Length: 466
Image (tube, rainbow, N blue to C red; front, side, top):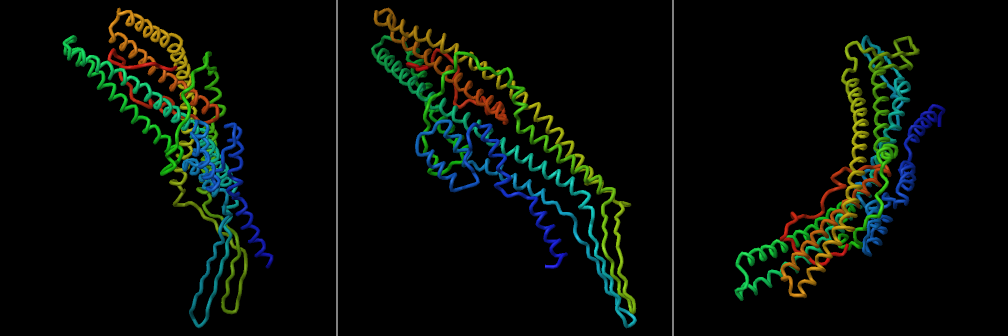
């Protein structure tokens, strides 16, 4: 190999070396995720390993932690986010400039004239630093976005899992409510047949039974909807969707959660802020490069060779492009707009993140207070009313419909308690996600999993287990 060929090969190898391997690009993200999530997610890049992990977890009833592990190992969204790092890494391979070769052959007068010019474009050398800086910023932004995808996906999976548990528990309440309403309507029908109750009372109890059947059907459908939402987050389809969910919504702690520092912690930990800052840096470097190219669009040096009849000339060549008619106004305007967009994006991310933190704090504290009040005050009182009504019924001092109404009101309190537990669990999941560096919006944190009916005296019910 000639010396010149060796130099060209070395430059090519150096440029290629600027693009790390996929494993090297992902390694910092895996390390950061292990720190933020307190466990090491399975590498989603290895399809076979991910499939084994998912199949093993699906082989037994899922809890929230198992669902999160499945999502991080299997979700196409997570994999797509990691693939973006490789896309961004393409900007690290900066071309230093092409060799421009111009030649001419002229025939006439019985002789041939030859002209050859080889010019190395030098603008790549002057702009390489800006291009590499922009490329590094793009990779940093892609890494931050990829890292944010995992805790955000984990939080959404936990929220969806809480909603599924709430939907399953509500089915239990609705079925109990229907059984009570059915018993009341059946009793009223026997009394009406014996001529001991008016048609109006019979119609009301039949209506209550019909409403209870409708509520039970809605609750059962809501379970299936919640399952499918979770399947989408887990990246499951086909036979893999035949899993079962284990567990119940947890009771809230006695003391309210400490969330006064959530807004500050969310900003400090935010991976979205890191990505937006990197986007600002990349846009600034591209704008600087565009300004330079607008002044000197082309600068090159090389060698000129000219052969005339009886004379051969070899000498240096200089090529300079001057922007007399084209100052790259469009390119410069585009980079300025990109820089402005990146700056506004950073501001928007910070503002929205602070709002998410404040909303999560309010939602968590309100749901905690409501759940504790229902558990400590409302449910015991409703249970006491049922017990006392039962005593009066046994003493022939109360009719059976008073006892049925008391049970209806107990189940109504159980539904309110269940909803408060769900909202508290989801708000705390949102708070945890913010501390891990990836917020989820208020709809994810507070969407109702099932239908609710307005509390009235026609609600049906039975025994409630807090």
